[in-house]
Image 1 (tube, helix red, strand yellow):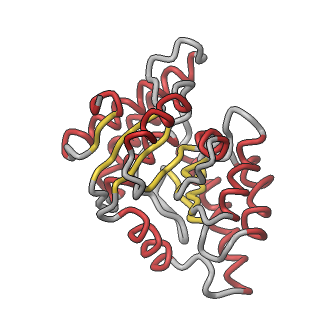
Image 2 (cartoon, rainbow, N blue to C red):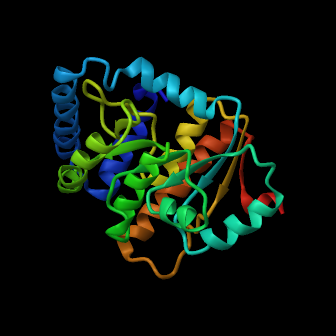
Length: 243
């Protein structure tokens, strides 16, 4: 999604949650600086054209399964797997990667801001990257501490150009903004952006009664954003709609 198309939605999100655009930009610039530093010693690292080619290869004209980290994910994954053709590409939203790995499935793509429910989630994402997963690492206003903690491990342990940095504000050098707010809906924006043949969404529960107030608001926002994409892309289906 072009930033000019995304920006009006971003402005609504900032106002709705009271978030700071300046904080988003600050963290995004920090991540951009990390990439600049790496490129000084390795000019081929993090080139945007390579990142785009990698995403197209993973997503374009493919059958995509997007996995959220709701408590229903494991059950839905097992049920979906019984009917799957075997050629699906799995995109995991942050901690969903841990659930997939537990069920012997390494995600093909992981979309994460590194602040999952469990500290072990980021470690599992590093393990997935070692096994070939493509990671989209997201910068926003209040996760710079997580980026500072985990980015050295990602940059030191994974293949070149396997980490793609993203943000929700206007992207500085090296960063991308494909649209979306939470890890889950950003997966959907990503699949739409790169022309997935079909998209099946599993492991999403927008009415989870066990989440706190802020998370509930984020789930409501994620649902609204996904519905915006679904209005223009009828290839995006929830797992429940296939049963």
